Image (cartoon, rainbow, N blue to C red; front, side):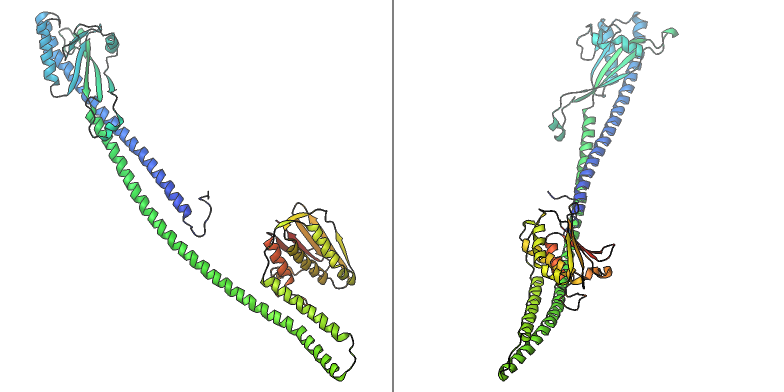
Length: 470
């Protein structure tokens, strides 16, 4: 799989597309997080409102029960006894008138012994309910709230109609005395008031509020992403078209440069061919005249024709090698064997110029390459080293296993490093003879093998070529 961060020249906006998708995911994640955060905050605010409302209702019930029932009952009967039907009905009327219209589901009053003293439903009166823990609530003298949630199916939130009593707020409040005939009795806990209210609609409103925020944020994010995506797509197409146009112009420029190079090549070739052709023509003309006069022929004229024909053939071969480079047939080849064959072929050249060849090449140097092409490239490099030495000198071949590099060092005048980039250009030569294609052909062959040729000078003098293999 392609790495989204890797540059693609034809599609420079691939990274931007990846970032846009990542931004969409980040925006959606942040929006959903914000949605639930705001929803929970709103839920807590609504729940606090319900609690405050329940507190006011509990305080009002406490006031009404004490003022309208407890005090009159004590004054009339001496004590409160809800088993008395008249007292119970009086309390029921007070409670009913107080909670009327407040959507109270259930309401019960317990004494401090966990006994149910009053029930809005009129059931279970006098039954002990140990789970109430009335004494603990009486000692704490504080109000307690608890949200009771029923098992609501998940799909109910999307039906816009939650079942009633899905969420119920239970309030437990200690009933206390207010004004008393005896001041020391003021604030005593008389019993425990517990009532429940249906707050499903409030939770339903908050849930729909969360869903509305989520939908709005989702739609806004999608619209923003779609706009951004289409802008990027259009910019991507425009950039791609400009890049393709640039590539077409570069290809045309390369073709023009190739044609210009071919023109220079043809000019050089015509110059190189003209000289041996002139000699061949003049030699042939002399042969024709001597043949007409029946003069005896010496060896000079045939030798001149042979030498110039050989030079002409070599020039044409170099031109063809550069103009139509051969693709290498990669195989395991022994570099030491190639160099041994080349030095054996060039042995007469070494002897004629009194050149001493030294080598530290280890046996069995194996590289990936084409035997014939590497032979031609290294032959040209060694020939260039021989031509750089005028009368006598040395050529050293060394191999670096760590760098996988062959070094060819000669005792000639060395390279002009300011012109080293021109050495591999076709028809560039510093010699009086030659086409200037030898180093260019060698460089092209080494490049097709994934290597390169580097030009340098040895510290003790002379040129030093580094043929670096991959």
